[in-house]
Structures are given as C-alpha cells and as structure tokens.
Amino acid sequence: MQTLMRGKDWIETPDWTREELDTVLDVAADLKRNFALGIPHRLLRDKTLFMMFFEQSTRTRNSTEAGMTQLGGHAHDLTPDKMQISHGETPKDTGKVLSRYGHGIGIRNCFYGMGNQYIRDVAKHADIPVISLQCDVDHPCQTIADIMTIREKFGTNTRGLKVTASWTYAPSYARPLSVAQGLAWLLPRFGIELTLAYPKEFYLMPHTMEKANAFAEHAGSKIKIVHDMDEAFEDADVVYPKSWGCHQFLQDQGVPEEEKKKQGMALLDQYRDWICNDKRMKLAARDAVYMHPLPADRGSEVSDSVIDGPQSIVFDQAENRLHTVKALMALTMGGRP
Ligand code: CP
Image 1 (cartoon, rainbow, N blue to C red):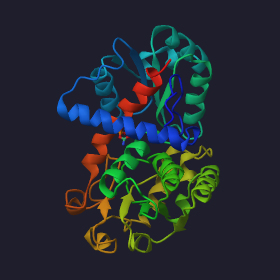
Image 2 (tube, rainbow, N blue to C red; image 1 turned 120 degrees about the horizontal axis):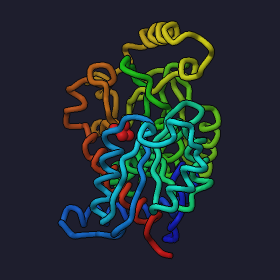
Image 3 (cartoon, rainbow, N blue to C red; image 1 turned 45 degrees about the horizontal axis):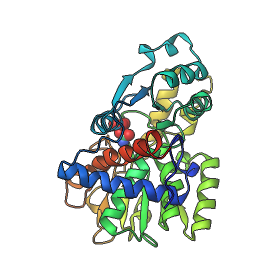
Image 4 (spheres, helix red, strand yellow; image 1 turned 45 degrees about the vertical axis):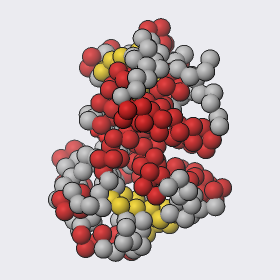
C-alpha cells in the first residue's frame, strides 16, 4: 500500500499510480464508515483549502467544503470575480500567495484548451497541493468517486465488467468532455471493458484517447468505440450516459456567437434520440445499473423513469464524491510528513 502522498497534486488520474489510487479508495471507505457511525475524523484540524471556481457547481463545491469542515479545517469558496484574477493576476502569483496562507488549493476551470493548463500553471508555482475540481481534460474527483461506487455495487474485482459511457442529447449548455475522458483514463486500469458511444462529431480529445488505450493495453483490458447508442447498451453491466460538447463549437473559430449557437443546435437536433430510456435499459444486462455524474438534463439525457428507477445509483455516486474528496484532501494536505 502506497501511503506517501503528502504534498502531491491531484490534477489527472494518470499522474497517480494504481497503488496510490487503491490507497485513496481504501481511505475513502474508512472515512465513509466513520461518517456513518458519527466517529469524528478531524485529520486536517485548523487547515485551509482555497477553492477557486471558474464555473458553477453543486456537488463539487459542497462535497469539498463539507469535507473540509468534517476533517476539522475550513474551505474558502472563491470565484475569479472575488479575486484579482479578474484583473489579470497570473496563475503563478495566485499560487505563490495562496501557498503562504493555507494548505491546499482546489480549482475548477473547464475553459476549453485552457483549464488544465491554468491548473498546472498554479501547481507549478504553489508550494501546497493543488486539487483539480474539474478541467477541460479530466474530472478526477468525479471518476474516483465513480470507481468507488462501481466497486461497492459489483465488488472490488472489476476485471471484465462491461461499462458503457455514452454521449447523450442535451440542449441546455455544452458540457466539458472531461468526464468521458476521465472515465477512459481510469476505468480500464481497473480491468473494466469500456465502450464509448457517441455521434462521430462528438469524438474525444485525441491525446486523451492515446493515453487511455495505452492504459487499457497495460491493464489487459479494452476500449471499444461505437456510434450507435443501442449497440453500446447491449449487455452492459453499467451504463453511464451523459452529454458533452463538440470540438467544432467549443473552439473559437472566429464565427460569431449567434451563428455558432445556431449551427450547434442544428447539429444537436440530429441526435435527439440519444436518450437513456426504459427501452434502452432493457438492452443492458438484467442487473445493470444507471450512473450519471449530475446535473442531468431530465427528459433529454434521461427519462425520469430511469433516473428515478430501481437501476439508478446516481445518489450513491453523488454521495461518494464526499468520501473520496475527503480521502484525497486528508492524504495530500495531511498524511505522513
Ligand atoms: N458532477 C459534478 O461535478 O457536479 P457539479 O458540477 O455540480 O460540481
């Protein structure tokens, strides 16, 4: 068991070894048990985490802030408009200054082509651990909670388990690609056979897929890509359908915003039938479970009957965000000197 994680950044799961990830899951299970029993676990007494959110959040913000309170510390809830970031302060200066005041920095920055680099720039100059609360490339706090949830439902030997991560239709806003990419990076390392399904325009960042395939090969598992949602659901043990954006419209190509929106909606309209409903759930394995990181676009991504139905484990999944982020903070901001 690898236990020396004090000071280590949590930016992408590929930065962590499988042994380190196992420790996080082990500690998360312990903290979950303590939380259930009301056993105090003030492992980060008097410590401070700075949380910088460039985008909105329900789960990440509240699980992290509640987690710091339960660990005996405090989290500052920051947004760029509350900081000098809005006047151009550099990631270097922000990282250096916050390092003088506290013990950890959490950042959500999902700007396409920029978020991951911003977090890495802060981390390069910070003397305290930096935790990604999601970027354009990975959402490691989500996927570590997802693997914890899958192991709770199916047991810790997940070799050969079939998981389908599918794109879904959602007209409300263009979500980052980072959950799907993060699943492609993490699940095959646990022996999971991953099927990725999406309309061809919604492909994932090529460099993330190269890395994902290398991990899968190393672990003796496979990643399959299909462009048909029904085919992807057949015999899956876990279905994880969620929407993400399209490169063509996430990139700035000099097209006026209104025109880009019109073209984006025209593309989306072709794929309105990419929804997780009862008919599709019947294609999956008999005891298949339905997962979604939330927020879900009900009626577009998923029917109420599925997300509120007996196969849905979305609230267990959301709960595990708390236990896993507490494990990450306890190990990186506390832990062994
Ligand atoms: N799943 C997730 O990251 O949710 P929030 O955007 O609400 O944090």
